[in-house]
Length: 108
Length: 119
Image 1 (cartoon, rainbow over the protein chains, first blue to last red):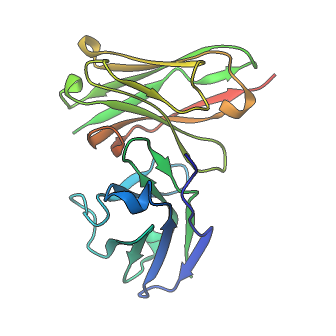
Image 2: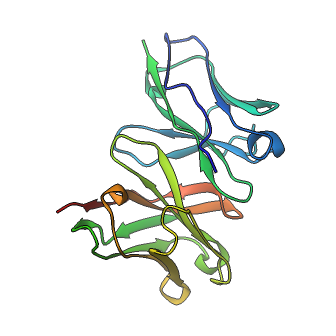
């Protein structure tokens, strides 16, 4: 299965909102609601931020939100903070597990 | 608190073998499927393999099928990955990952163990 498509990089200033897209096909992102998002800081293990398209695990700030339209899922981070600077990966987990290529978020 | 601790990584020559281990604590280990996910240097995440709680169901990525074998010992709360016929492209950090539910909803990650395949 092909990797999901994410922009290589996005950026925003503190306090602003940014959205990261994740495009798949009707057999993965578009075919179900099993989409998750992971945050990874350099040298650290990934952390689950969003699951089932829009659900937040306990402890994840509500500044992080997820949505989906057709074959594209999105992660929106509002009220950007310096500590949000990291790599973000989307993932489809129905049947097989497929990741996006990752997006580097820079907080200006 | 759930903890996953990987071990067994190292430097191995192409064609060689290595066995990774993951020690789990803080969870009813046999009640969860488990996963291995890897990340090559400077690259993205790649799912490698999954195993059900009872070891009845096992899945592999095409890139490792026939070369890697996942297994578990529920009595020891441990997960394993036997890696044979290693290639340079297998060089990566290998993470042991517990799902929130099912297989692929990856919830708790270990810190990872580094595998380097080089002559």
